[in-house]
Amino acid sequence: MRQWPLVLAGGLLLGACGLIPGFGGPKVSGEFQGDWSGVVQGLRLALVGLTTEGQVDYSNQLEIKDPSLTKGYLMELPPEASEGSYRVVAYRDDDNNGRYSGGDTVLGDTCDKYLLYANGSGTKLYWVGSLKLLKVKHGWNGYDAQKGGDPYQAPVYSDYDLYRSGQCP
Image (cartoon, rainbow, N blue to C red; front, side, top):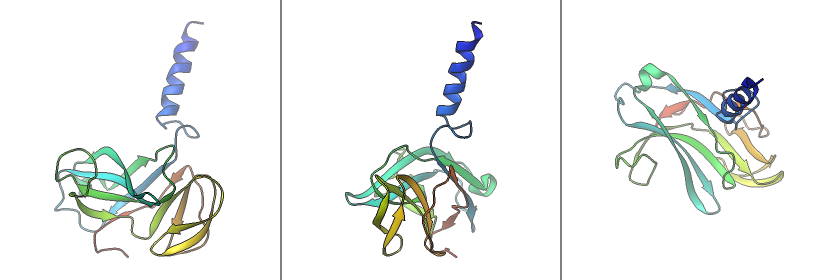
């Protein structure tokens, strides 16, 4: 009987880390598209957004050693964010501070695929390549500006591929 607290604690820890489906926050995943062979060191990922407060970012400590070998990524989204539209960017941490900042070099992004954060459900104005009124639900919403349609919610926003700068399809 003494094992149950350990099992429960372990389950809660795995759930908080997002390793058990249905627990933890939503995630975004994708592959590295294009030629990343010249990028072998210092590549990091960040979730960069445009909000009413200006540009905000949620830097991820995930460093990709060699995107040509890794081929893909999986990143957990923050449980809460400032309302706005976001893209995953791959950047070189030129100032070695471990987070995205203005002096860093952006090497690629998710092009026309956006992650929208809404503080409440309804029709709201978002930047998705241009300003657009979109019907969203509270929390994270996925949106493909190239395909159009309505934003959607998912536990994993897949196919958010990272393309080298200037190589969007």
